[in-house]
Length: 115
Length: 112
Image (cartoon, rainbow over all chains, first blue to last red; front, side):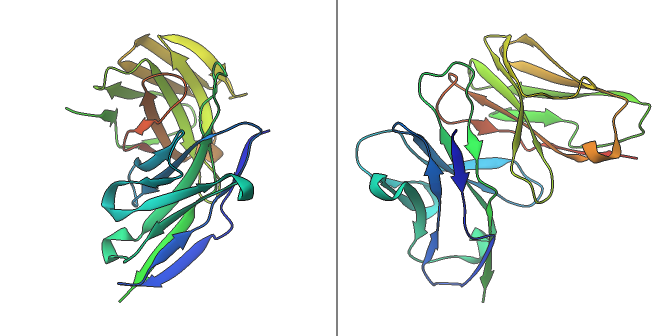
């Protein structure tokens, strides 16, 4: 069965420091992978996605993620964090060619930014 | 209006009430979803509709009843809810059944 693990429940990063949020997935074939961000009281906003091709994908707000098949990982990175990046981040995996399949989400990582 | 909208944004209801949540997408997508987001739990997929037909129903109690009258609108009818149903209910849409989903802002539901 597909699953997504985000090992870090809460991370605190200083403003201006680099960020890496971890995501590991379990899926037999090549997955579709996503990162979403959720600000308090809001819905989820898509940051970036990986379907195929270049394993380093660029997203909005200066985020990028790298797909590593050998490690079953899709970690999210940002070189310099801004206070406005404080939010909850969700990694998700989607399956190909399965009718009725929707995204499977991890439990999320809460990012706090200190000044 | 653009994207995915949800109304109401906040709802407080008693256990004997009947209410409905509304979702509308302005993206021309074919698939729509209801998710439940509770504190400390991952997002739970409740229902999936593709071209107005329900294609997935994840063992959701019958007190939740979805309706998809057309590809742009999705409703979640609520009746005789329990306090544990208090949560953020998120609607999403996507071009097809796989691929990225676009979320609405959610309805914060409190059952008293």
